[in-house]
Image 1 (cartoon, rainbow, N blue to C red):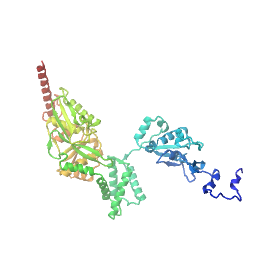
Image 2 (spheres, one colour):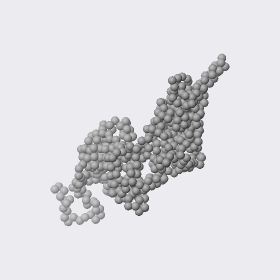
Image 3 (spheres, rainbow, N blue to C red):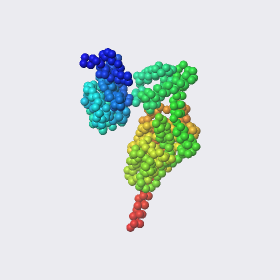
Image 4 (cartoon, one colour):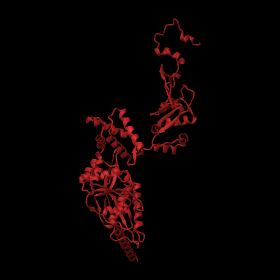
Length: 527
């Protein structure tokens, strides 16, 4: 009633130059600023904030220009996503949150105090001192869910003592799931839902089988299915295009296969260039014949969205000396720590099997030929050991075979990663140079469950054009590579002379004797 004149002004002429918005200013104090509207909400609010800036999270107080000044009032107070989620749940991407330092700090303060304050970030830091609004704090009762990769979690857990107190519940999501009837039904349900939602052609049974196989391929495991549904969906969408192009009423297996092949074709330029250089002889890779101290190793090159196997020639030379096993990659600072560890393990294996009654007077040099990018990982340690055994025994290795697998000091061949890419990489080279029905790959037995090869290679194996040899230990592998028995120690503790290990033992014994004579002659000359 004290301001009744604002509402009733009879016979009062308007100011001739008054701005239209100026008439509303006296009445703003009677307006209602609807801060949060949950009138249509069913259940608790669930808010996903994909851009968690400080203003988007905690709201802001807007200002407008009037007569050259910035003014504000309570009608310009705007809510943030944490206000909208009050009483419910707020989901924030971890990576985006840590990019905004004010946001992360403000979120911790709000959760600790259980209060929400609408203010500018500069005011909180004391940088802005102009007179403005200070709304009362709002009680906070929100469950905050931060979604991100494990690396961010581990970093915050280790470096921020407040993090472990505020975010106590951790849930990890696997990128693989078991290959069983329940999950197969879930896969089929996902496929049907995707087709219905995006108006795609539905898949027939043969196409569904190929999609499930592709899911196992992404998981690199016959007993697992990948949960990378975005990649699965992309293949189905592309296959739908090819099906419609063929005027088909359904997406069939040939369309799924074509979509996968075309996806690889768009990304495999580097692989084609490498294979071309091998075929033309720029990279020296042998796929026929036999050679001493030389073997085909297998590596994986990753290009982000695409990976492929590339064969590499591994060579070993040995001579009398006390240098042990020299890793040329490490000496040239092109070898990683894990690769260096794998090479050092070889010395332990040789010492246990051939140096129990004599010193290991040996200098062996190992190198990945034509390698200019560096080497890491221990997946070639068994390959390097085979090359050393061949060089010591002077027995040639079959060059139409390639090897992958790490080894321990006891000679057990251990599982490695990327086995499908490695097999397919060597197969492509053999195919380019001509399949002769003898080529193949030695892999660890423990990697058999990871085999999810291309249809072409499966067919070649079925027809006897290509082979895969599961290997459990070094003895099995050297027998496959040379065609000669590895040998077992007899009652006298010696290996049979006509075996690989017998020849290695004899060579090392001769080296030890020559080194001893050389040392004696040197001592005599010094005297």
